[in-house]
Length: 242
Image 1 (tube, rainbow, N blue to C red):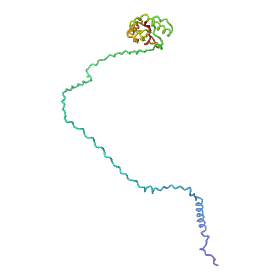
Image 2: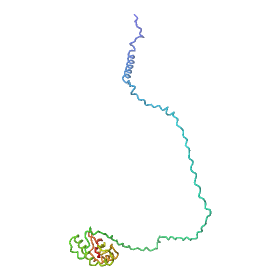
Image 3: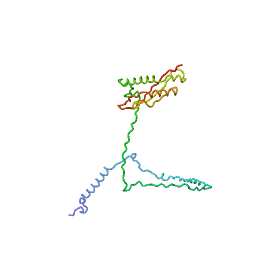
Image 4: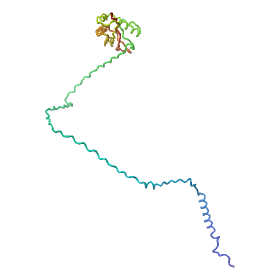
């Protein structure tokens, strides 16, 4: 008995191959469907810039006109007459002697000269000095202020005894009270120096200087235990009679 089907047309013979191809095709379609993305048109940004129109813009060509440089100044005019001055002065040649010493020259040692330091005279005003200059007879006064008052009193009494008040009447000055402003210094040794006077007449100024020069030697004023120069001012007041 012959079979009804042709053995060459057996479909089941390649079924495994067809199944594998179909499975691979389905897996590929599924993968593409999963990874497929869509975007809205509003979110799309154009990052391209068309510069064709700008590049076609024509740039005007400008011509630079060169400014010619100014002409050079004319040369100075030559003098009409050129004098030739003869050099009659003789130039003395300066001989420069060598300062180097020879081997046989004896070297003489120079003794060092001591330079004495000159102390600067410090001047302290009468009203701020720590220890005022002491006028003879004021040594027993206690305290700096007491010695200042004693000095004022002693100097006033000394001027009243020595000053010639009759000189003012002989100079023909107008009647009334007159003043002579006096200033002197008591130096570091207690001597009277730098006497200055200013009054209504030169003769009176000279008389005041003569009297102040006779003031006795004092004990010098001290500042921080060191002798200093102390200036002192005092007026001489007198009356001119009619």
